[in-house]
Image: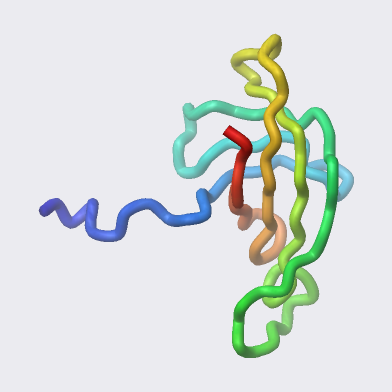
Length: 104
């Protein structure tokens, strides 16, 4: 067994998100630099989830409180394709994001 395959892929999927004025505007999977890029066309819902951490976090948002967005996004490579629904979650402040689920 290869030592690189011991851990498998992380769930939920880590994503790189570009955001503007406090809202996500674009995302793509990490660490793939050449993977599909998605442009967010609409933010449908925003909410805050509580983390399962058994202890409080000193961070106001991102430690024990997770900011979430339900968005519609379209692949940048296929702008004529219909938009799909995704849920993005900011785990530990700006820069640490997860793709929680997508409507496939």
